[in-house]
Image (tube, rainbow, N blue to C red; front, side):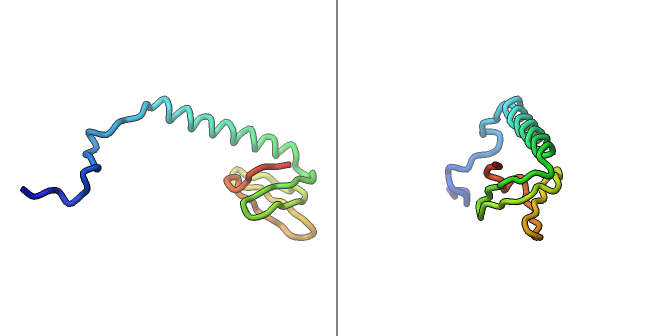
Amino acid sequence: MKYPPYPYYIYPVSNQIEFEPERRESSSRNTVTFTKQLLNHLQQRRGREISVATPVEIIKGTLEEVFPDHILVSNEGEHYQIRLEGIIYIN
């Protein structure tokens, strides 16, 4: 008898546990709601001095514009486009 070429811990899809669709939807819904709230908060702070922490550095400057997927911060003639996924915190 020959064994299948894959390890024993890989099972057919029919044997896998399916997650409840409500759980996945609610998580997605919470993320969308949080993103909308963040964008609304940032829209109110346009033109003001902010400090944005990213995994690489902390960028301080004026919040110039807010886009659906990133923000534009300017500091002493330099412009920084910061993706929303890359923001750790805003002060």
